Amino acid sequence: MAGEEQGGGMPAIGRREMLGVTGVAVCGVALAGCGTSDGSAKAVVPPGIKGKVIAKKADVPVGSGKVIQEWKIVITQPTSGVFKAFTARCPHRGCSVNRPQDGVMTCPCHGSEFAADTGKCLKGPATGPLAEFAVKVEGDGIVIL
Ligand code: FES
Image 1 (cartoon, rainbow, N blue to C red):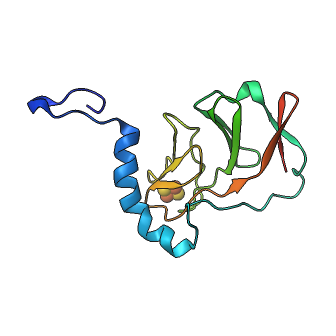
Image 2: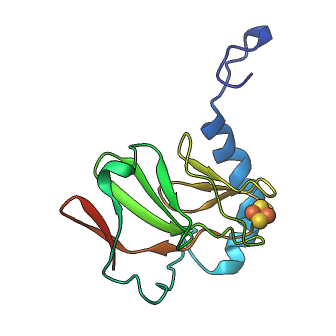
C-alpha cells in the first residue's frame, strides 16, 4: 500500500509523489500540444458570475476545496489563505471533477487527475489542464474576476 514501507527495504513513495512522476509522463505529451509552458490555462468567465462572491472562505478547507455544481467551478485552497478557482469540467469528456484530496482533483468518470494548485493534468486520459479563473478574496468571500 502506498505510504507504507514495502518489503525488501525499498522505501515507499506517497500517492502525490508517484503521480508527479507517472502523471507527467502520461499528460506531458499532450500538454506540449497545448502550447502552455506550465500546463495551466485561463478560463472564460461564464456570463453572470463576474464580480460575484461564489464561495465563502470558510467553506473551502485548506488542502482541499469545494465544487460549486451550479457553475461547474471548483475552488481550492492549496495553502492557507491562497485560493484558486478552476472549471470543474474535465477536459476529457466534461464530467465534474471531485473536490481535491491530497492536492489532487480526480475525475470520477475515467480517472483523470489534476493538481489542486495549478489545475495541471497529472494523469490522463485528459490531455490538458483544468482552465483557471482569476479570483480575489473580498471580506469572507471569494470573488470571480
Ligand atoms: Fe474526466 Fe473522462 S471525463 S476522465
